[in-house]
Length: 77
Image 1 (cartoon, rainbow, N blue to C red):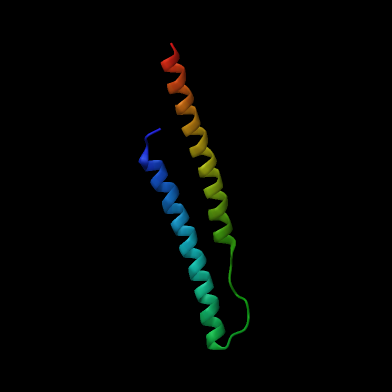
Image 2 (spheres, rainbow, N blue to C red):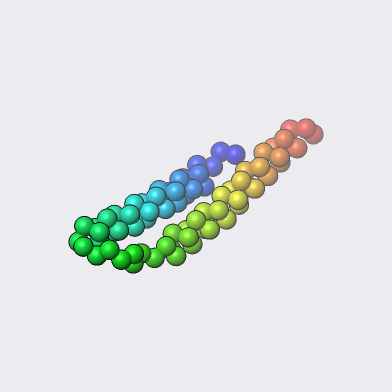
C-alpha cells in the first residue's frame, strides 16, 4: 500500500501526543519550581489521544493488510 497520507497522519498523532506529554511534564516542573508542590495536571486528554491513536492504528493496519491481500489475489488470477 503506497499511501503516505495515512502514515503522515499516524506520525503527526505520535508527535502531538509526545508534545502534550512534554508540556505536562514542563508544567509540573514549573509548578515545582514556583513552590507549588501539588499535582494539578489532567491526563484525560492524553488518555483520549492514546485511545484514538490505537483505533486509528488498528484501522490503518487493517486497510494496509486488506490492500496487500487484494493485490495478491488480483495477481493470482
